[in-house]
Length: 386
Image (cartoon, rainbow, N blue to C red; front, side, top):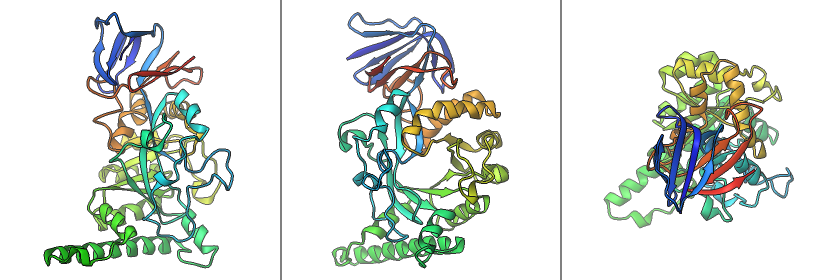
């Protein structure tokens, strides 16, 4: 199947902006980008005159498909609140492809999200990147993008402190996390010794420690929820102690320590920017946080966190520009930066030859609140059009 988007203002993300350009797609891939591209006679043509063309947008932190909409106990499957260490959970087992949020998010031009468990536990389980189009989990999930959800700050200590269980404090959060990682280290050591002795099968499998072992081996990223500046520093301290490949989720007070985060080459998935002071650790949320972090030199992605609200991803990214973020960097925050953080920058996040043909066509600037998404292409196929 061939599809061509012609006459559009193409935001390639990595190769600048092309005026009145063409993007040619074939068999699900981008095969040509530029001015004067020959369009095959048998190609489906979308005329993007006066419109903007971007890669399919990416939200690098979401819970779409796991908590469900409307929000009811029957569809709330994102937090297993029966113990603070839940590394044996797989978000894929709660993912509902029929969640009514998906069509809204897809129609807004968001074609890929990273979704997974929530932050009620110190270790919440495995999340993964998915396409926002598909009838079944198998059609949506992108293998090899798994990450382990971890959380510091108020949520886990509030959940278990109310039960008079550990953790009930921030130091309790850190202790639970360290103890789990040390147990996983011991488990890996036991496995290595058994394998060296030819007795690998003598060690009983432990799913929780097995999954944490992947984090310790840097086969899986640690996705660490942290709002307050001190929680961010705790996340970094523990990540460095155990040599984890980590990402800072929310990083709400990152602006307070932006120079440190830049020195650490921290990757920050910031947002949602429309958060209010719903709890103490959000009292000092600032709309210019992404701008400050990006200007300091951090790798920044912008997220919406929730489900159908993800359709506002470009709108809130526009607010980040209003608050001082460079326009090109803001677009990167919801395309190539997000793709890099979830391990898909070789496939998604920019309009380049050889990448997957996930694209969005807007009737104005992609980050303007007057703009609407007109067409969405996934895998070289037109799936939404207004």
